[in-house]
Length: 133
Image (cartoon, rainbow, N blue to C red; front, side, top):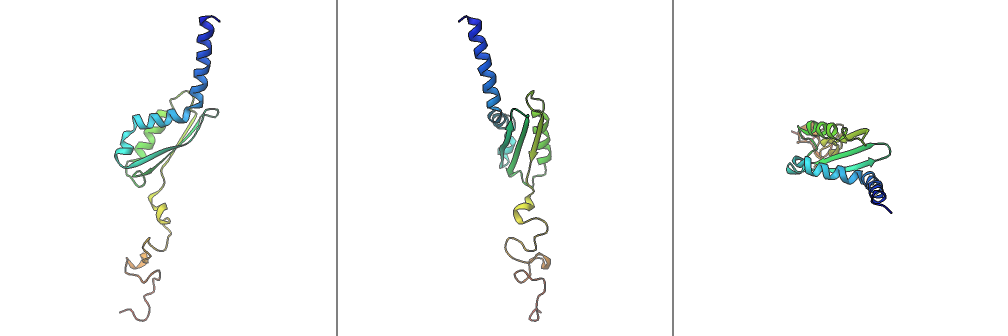
């Protein structure tokens, strides 16, 4: 085996490792280039990183939910990752903070107090009843 054969084998195995570790490389990039996520109490998770289709899905959570600058963060992640030659599509999701409370249509707060009464309700009813002053 010649040195060029060894170099070719090393290149081929390096390419396979790079493709197989797309998820790891995205996770490492986010940790290194986006420290603001953790600094502000946020979390990140690579939900999908398919080297065959080039699809990458990242989900932000924790302090990112409801954060006023999460749109900037998601835009920065998308803009940077789409430049990678093996990435064809990037999706960054940030769950709506209201989702953890049941969404905007939830009739009661998490404490069970009717929101239609401004926190003065009687455990779920907006009708105060005959004993109400």
